[in-house]
Amino acid sequence: MLQIIIKLISVLMVLMGVIMIYDARILTKKFFGFGDQNEASNGLKILGFILAIIGGLILFFNL
Image (tube, rainbow, N blue to C red; front, side, top):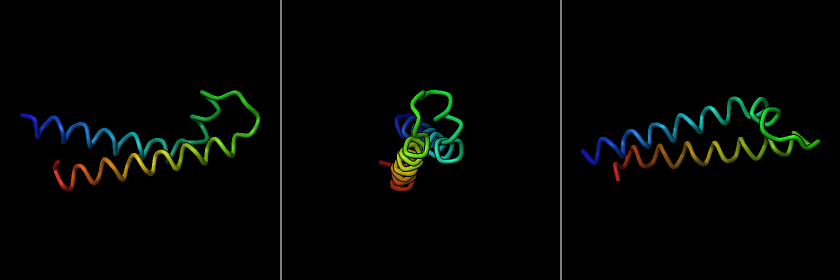
């Protein structure tokens, strides 16, 4: 049962990471109101990439 919960959490982490990479510009416009959106979208893409990698590694190694 614990392994299924860990797999679901890791799949959700990968999904959130991919969504953050793909929709970084839209999420930046929606949630942040400052002028430099390129910096914020790059930050969201990096964060999404890291989140997707961590979720994928957890899923792969089934920690």
